[in-house]
Length: 129
Image (cartoon, one colour):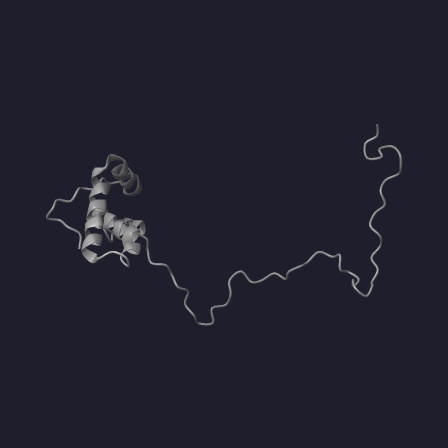
């Protein structure tokens, strides 16, 4: 029982030499090459747009404290709801979420890992905006 004509014939013939024909020009088997492009396009006097700093960057720069950081994160995570919920309901959701970040042990541990500080829970008089 032979496998793939082992020992029966010589090695398979290579590809035929390239020849030009009407439907295939000579050199059509060459690899496609792309000319290298410059890594940074010229700005022509334009200033690149920079993304606004993240809540964590603002915390680390000292612009906001840990409570401000939590307020920014809550606002960021609920901004998509502003188009579909009335303002009083959205304000209540944000307040509950903000309080949960400070009270829940797992969530406050995540905040501590990110900021190095444990957030203080807000009292009823300290509402959000």
